[in-house]
Length: 196
Image 1 (cartoon, helix red, strand yellow):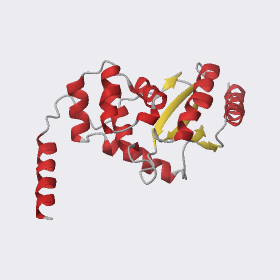
Image 2 (cartoon, helix red, strand yellow):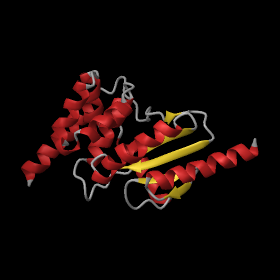
Image 3 (tube, one colour):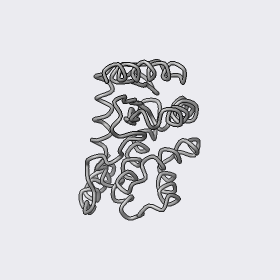
Image 4 (cartoon, helix red, strand yellow):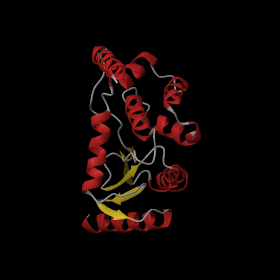
């Protein structure tokens, strides 16, 4: 036990000594679609969730193709840590990638090769995307993005999110599905047009 505690203390000391120059706790992930759109779609997702992987290709991508100029699409993290061992780390890695302007590319990469997801693979994907490896590795070692990811999770809990993926259109929870989300977007767009 003493040996384990000494190892844990040494690990914490190493993390505390990691250089945080150029790193930020805040997210720089940005949205997709039209940043000034009156209709906002928010997805709470877990990067290790198989249903989220399917939704990414069958719901999110087609929605953006159809409504990309009319909606602002925002991704929020909801790592289901009790079910998915690497969900939190994958979320942090995507945030570290966002600092280098590659959030969406990293998300695409994780979903494309989700079955390979483990701690080593997170760095492999960063390298494949041409990220500054030192900056990415330091970002991961310091766990500087943990609070950002957990803030998304807490926001989701407050909104009644219990599983992933969960979508909201202009703050209203909508059942996951291309047709249901399209209908909700059309309704929201109609409301915007009536106000104009």
